[in-house]
Length: 167
Image: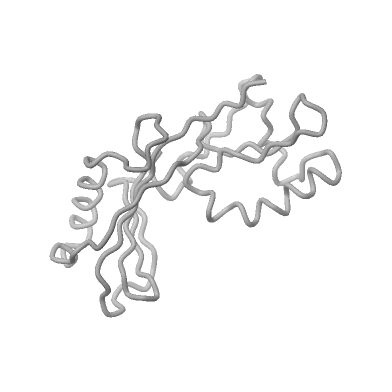
């Protein structure tokens, strides 16, 4: 059994604290960036995954540069804001950018993976669906299409445009 996952770096930045000026999250797939303001006043800025497969948590400098250029194009008032830190992490992604949650050919082995950039937001809710799968041996109706078998049959899920960042 092969689980079709690839790992890509994902980066984010945090600015110096500012007075509250940005009360929402703005995401743009056009310029591949997102921005929000934390409770401490820091701007939290991120982009899509790096386009190469890697386990490196540093990511490419060109992604950070493009992200900051994009944010400053959207919001010129942020051009003079200082960035305090940058970090990277690893995302696990499927070919159709939708997660896998289901039964495997191995008895009593279940998978819940491939959440990509949406994992931190979606996995708390997916736990309920995963518990249903484990307890009943069949997927919850909301997760019925997320099976591992879709990669064998070609019934992929085309939801990449619904993601908050570019993949």
